[in-house]
Image: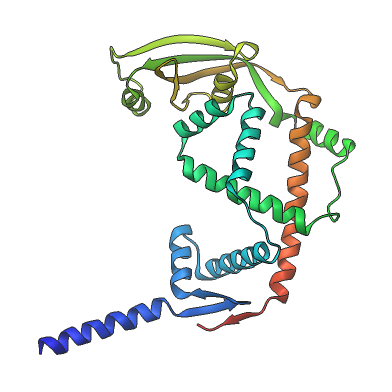
Length: 273
């Protein structure tokens, strides 16, 4: 009897495993299982049809990467990080250290890899097919979107300094907490006086919010941004490159949407389950 029950359990388990691993659809040569669909639904809190649509899009995207021999290696990633550091006027070691203090560095590099794969694919399939943003295009965008390029010339803060990073994390969760192992000081900064690292941190922190915790001078540091004052609009020449990137990204997205909609129409999609 025990052998029969065990056999029944094993058979049931295998049947269930076969069910969840059953192929639901094939996009060209890429199979998608019922399990893939279920995971996509749960992870993104979406309907089954939305999950299927996303999986089709992802399969077509990955197929295009393969068909166009698009790859990204560690040297590509390092070069991109160097550019990010230079853009923020920081040396590469300080920039990497700051990133590691803010987030998981491995996830950060994986996101860069995906960004570079995307850029390489866009460059390959859209070469000569996307009109470059002109000077007039950029100036019109700047005039219509000046609010995006505002910056505070004066920033009032409370600075927290401690040898113990955990204490700063506790203060983030309980701002009323006091500790003799945490030095607090009210500081007012001017944009022109900020070091690249502090400028990056303060400009990316909202009013009435704590900044990331970062290491400096053998201590852990954190700011609470009280107020941002003397708001000014950055000059067109100072944000020209940023505007160009924004406009081209919009045009690339529009082109890619049409490109992949065409791929989806012409793809061999077999629905099995």
